[in-house]
Amino acid sequence: MKEKISRLSATEKALEVIQELENKYGALMFYQAGGCCEGTQPQCFEKGGFFPRMNDAMIGTINGHEFWIDRDLFEYWKYSHFTLDVTDGFGPGGFSLETPLGKTFKVQYKLFTTEEYENLEPVQRSE
Image (tube, rainbow, N blue to C red; front, side, top):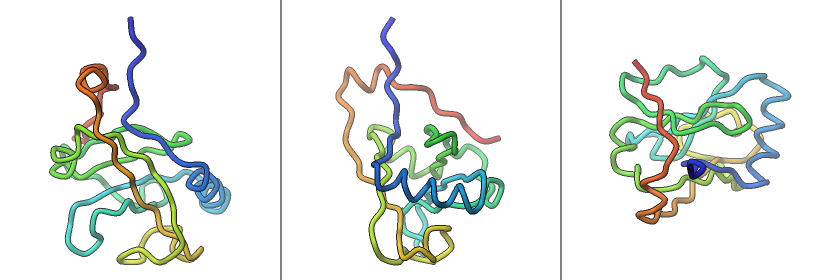
């Protein structure tokens, strides 16, 4: 049986910032919304600092931290692999934990091949 393909990964730069945030705040979570104010950039919160809506999708974890996607945004991007990255600057809204570091998380997308799509890890939905 083939190993399931992950929907999510992170760059080394992102992992370094996540480790810094984890050292300061403990358990984290990510949420990527599709709204007008926060745009579609992922936001990082202390675990439990944001509650996903009914039927939002958890597409995987990074260092054990859940990565949730807005249910409507997931339907649009479900054919894509998400790579979490970080860049210098301030993201929209300023609510994400990396903001005081002068950083902002971003996602790079890559479309899955048909074969990859048919062998993806399942998503978890919030209730």
